[in-house]
Amino acid sequence: MPANLNVSTVEDTIKAEQMFPAYLLKKLRYRLTEDDYNTTRDNIIVTYTPNEAFAAILEFDGLRGWDYTLKGYIKEIYGIDLDDIHHKLT
Image (cartoon, rainbow, N blue to C red; front, side, top):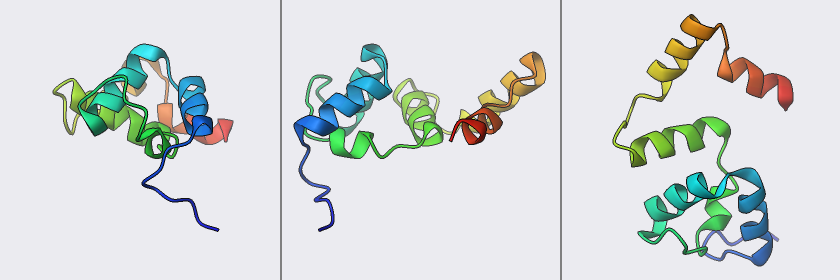
């Protein structure tokens, strides 16, 4: 049976809390619900790829569209390719 994307479960909230530090999870929740403690959309948050979460948090912080630019800076300055790291971990 397909998951209902309109209903968040306790398991979704636990998984979201394991995936993200509290201060980042608050930003993701606020972006979806306008309440940083509202867990009703945690079912959506747990489906985010690292790239989606990074872009959403930057957008929340007023840096919409900067995700690729910032990742490029990190790669050029520190020699760390965030996308490559993610692919190696999955």
